[in-house]
Amino acid sequence: MSPVGETTGGERELPSAEAARRRTFAIISHPDAGKTTLTEKFLLYAGAVAEAGAVKARGNRRRATSDWMAMEQERGISVTSTVLQFSYRDHVVNLLDTPGHRDFSEDTYRVLAAADAAIMVLDVAKGVEAQTLKLFEVCRARSMPVLTFLNKCDRPGKDPLALLDEIEDQIGLRPTPVTWPVGVLGDFRGVVDRRSGEMVRFSRTAHGARVAVEERLDAAQAAREEGDAWAQAVEEVGLLDAVGADFEEKSFLAGETSPVFVGSALTNFGVRHLLDAVVDHAPAPGPRPDAEGRERGLDAAFSGFVFKIQSNMDPAHRDHLAFVRVCSGRFERGMTVSHEPSGRPFTTKYATSVFGAERDTIDVAYPGDVVGLVNASDLRIGDTLYAEGPVRFPPIPSFAPELFAQARPSDTGRHKQFRRGLEQLEQEGVVQVLYDPDGDRSPVLAAVGRMQFEVFSYRLAHEFGASVELSPTPHTLARRTDEATAAELRRTGSRVRILVRRDGALLALFESPYWLARLQSDHPDWCLEPVLEEMAGSSS
Image (cartoon, rainbow, N blue to C red):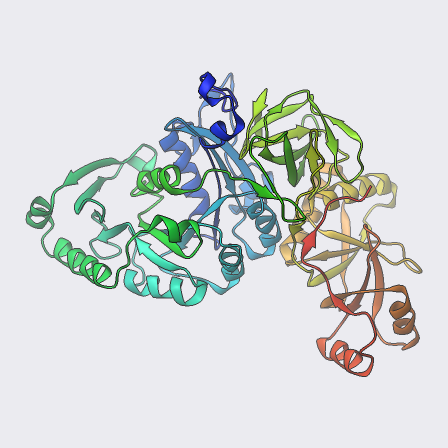
């Protein structure tokens, strides 16, 4: 695989020309919908892996794939987002794989800020599930172009037409199928390509480890060989034609419609159609608005923002990696840029491209690319980096916490390691860390889901050598407050707890929404604001 940052000719030297070759997208789904399998198969079809599940050898090692963390491999689930950068059809693809579990939706939410489009993967047996509906709604609210993949068509599932109704009713996207299944779900023969009217019939490979053999049949041949299965598919396609459910580029790019592809990631059926659609239809990076709403052109000087921090991806080196989405200009390794929150210069000597847990030194990058900056300990999620003219990009969305737990080291002799791990994992956004300014100095962890606490405990023990004891608190919601209201809340003698966040914000924690509602009714002048769902970067 050639280095994705290299140009291939003078006509591609302008950042805007190089950006036109980029496709940067996220894959989102509910758990077990097949998102990670689909990610692996994209790598297979792009030639980035020799066979599914086994990445090309690099020296005497094997590259890691999307689930690189030991906890992910042990549990068989994704708990952190991953960047995979590869080439396909003379394009540079930046694939942002995300956790499927709702407890890690905050990580997915941040990754969506760095993506230009998304693939929504739905299990045909489950359809749109409530636990991840919010993520799909986020794409819809941001008018992000979304491609839909109806996965696991080789297994029994819901009626495909009913699934289209679910997508439109629950998400608000009008589905426009590009391919359609031939054969009932569970007896999947292939697909009708609505663009040509042909049938594409697939042949299985052992364990789906190789690219599926595809055979194209015209309508007459498909009718002879597939009989009733073809007749039913043609009838259903006729219904789609009648209601005008046809792919339309403009409405797709506006985030109003979603082209639908069907298949099975496990058997590789339909994977090529979907990957081709990413290259053919997903938008290339465009000018991004800054925090004031002004667009920064692609050919302006370099700018980018940090959307993810990850430490210990290489346990042998205890490294620290900041993921930066390039928004404008040409990034060159070693260039000195400005750190927007502090105004201080920042040197980019150790810059890498990212492929799961593995990295290669990168010399240049363009809008849409993701650059990994190694040991960039001064950077925080949401920070902007720029060259020449100052710029600050909008805050990165974050979820308000719903669960809280007091944290103490199991072994007080490991307090130093505990503090170091606490600081690092907070910086990554694994949890939020709150402190009592007037009482117990043991930190309180705040999270969206319980598994965030499990990941925190696991990584603290395995990466920092500090086991932790977590004691859940009874609080269920937080409100942002000020010093005057905090003083009044303390005087009420209620069970409201006042804590302070890293950025200095005061948070009032409540055990019950009813008590909060009563206080707001009795004291409408008190400052009890919803915790802003944004992360603006460091202030240091």
